[in-house]
Length: 128
Image 1 (cartoon, helix red, strand yellow):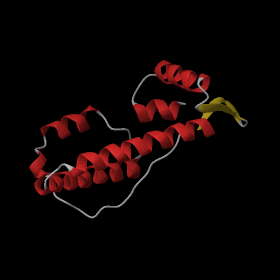
Image 2 (cartoon, rainbow, N blue to C red; image 1 turned 90 degrees about the horizontal axis):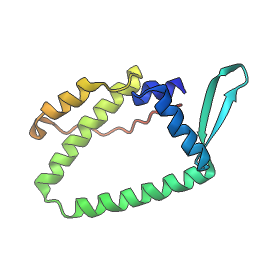
Image 3 (spheres, one colour; image 1 turned 120 degrees about the horizontal axis):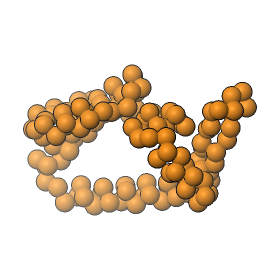
Image 4 (cartoon, rainbow, N blue to C red; image 1 turned 90 degrees about the vertical axis):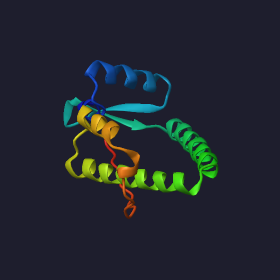
């Protein structure tokens, strides 16, 4: 669970509380590492997968509805911003470090028009 603490940037008690509630709801399962009893692994359950899929469907539907009402200039800004996020995700995946306050401050200080479109590549980080 220490990986979750590092990735989320919160305290161990916070992660433990959230994990406890998700386990109680049947959304994740907790397993001890047989080779090191101090390590705890968490994994999503089939109920958790179903709930996650429902949220993804809802999110995709809402994003489609939102994008349908934007004009071409707004869509260009959305594309540029997605390219910026993609680069950030790639950087995080390369060095495996959680984002810090400096990333949030830099994002807030960057004007939307400063972003430029780039080729989109899908990057996904998983882990406990």
